[in-house]
Image (cartoon, rainbow, N blue to C red; front, side, top):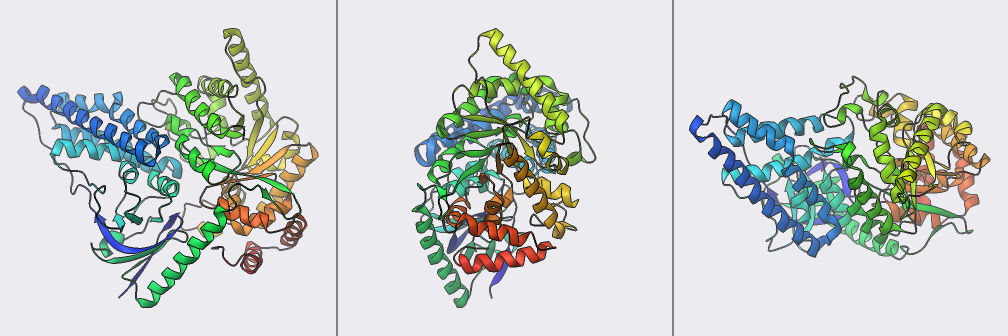
Length: 582
């Protein structure tokens, strides 16, 4: 009897095949003590395990460079940095010396604290970074315990991989010709495994609760990475259905690929910049291959991750990361957002954890409260602007005072660089994210002080509707197409138009085909979305006239509820674009 399960769509595509189940290290490391005379020997055992792990990671890095692509090696580089992180190493050694714990237990406890800290964060981006620490930890523990880590490189036939969680290094070494798709019981869209699946174009569904209890090796699985569905032991009718889906999807992708080198222009010649959101430099290759025209949002928080991260000493590291992306995407623009995170997330942070971090000391508030951190990033950004088409974006602006102060700091940094004789971009475009209702309502004032707006609809929706979309009790109220949100979007576009400013949108709404006609009709100059849906958005834009889109936007403005708007747009989209998955 077939079992239907639902998860999170992570990478588009349809797959049917035999399951191979990946089991990680079972059980906890037991606590026991080391005799005093063997403490140094125990510490040496730790360093030997790290050395062996380093050798394995370096081998994976070379394998990835020759297979998937050298640009993905930065993920393994980050793992090598974690392996040698002084905080993790020193804390482990200290526990062995002072508590006489066996090194397996000491290392497991030290890394467990870091993993739990990341996993407990509200921000999905930071939550998913716990898998990087977990990946390194498990490799070291396998060495210490004399175990062989899971290896999928020698698969003999095409399979669907099933696991509790796929670590980044495991995902990178998946043989593309032998893996039809994968499904995991945990993880989210922002996990490295999900990001890599999209780049490698492997169908994937993540976050399928209870998956490991239902699947056994050799079972047949069908999965749809576009809608997040998994069927275990599908019956004849279900196999036929998934077969049709797979055929439709492949034909659809071929059609979309033909649009790759074309602009996102309407039938009557109105051009929209269709850009991509990225989190890591290694994603740039996929940006180009998917036909995006620039990067509308480059998140930089990964540069501050890691228990031993030192943001005040990271100017060169930041500069190299920014330049790598700017050069690869040139002459198209890359919009780089300054750090958007809470102060308590910084390594060695002097700031206490907050009870309500979404309304607290984060993003531009953090940067203006810590000028050393802010100046370091601005120095790197300005230097990168001398090499590529870099735009600087300030997040979570709530009013004019923050913009003026941020610009003042920017000018101070320019003066510093001039006095040092450093080469830097003299006047890169400066923009603000419109994600707080007060900023949308004051957009007319803000437009006089910046070069562009970028609307973050995820937070704008949450703040406007007072809804935490990660809270299952109220997530039904999270409606980006709510009339109140759409009215704020119109205000922002009108303010930008009145002052000749570029206005784009980089939230999830930009990647929703249901909303494309509305945003186009409102007058947004650019849409920046994840690569998985970018070709579909381009197809919608190229299939209508601007006047048609304006008519849709005006019609939507007449409705009084999100449900009416969603129903209208769904019926319209299904009629005009029957091959789109909505």
